Image (cartoon, rainbow, N blue to C red; front, side, top):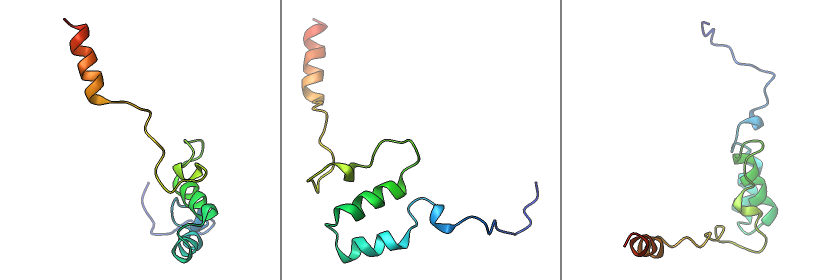
Length: 82
């Protein structure tokens, strides 16, 4: 299909992931605003994807690791192969 150079004017630009300028303004004004962080994470995620890490209550840090320790796993594998 040839591109006619026209845009779908019925599509709201806010439907594009991570493009809602009001959320960016809220985060610039208050980077600790939990609601704005969740909104930003949701705005950047796809429908039905994992929830954004900002949804973790009471944390500025990323979600903690599952506890996987690469060195311990390698040592256990060496011990099992002997």
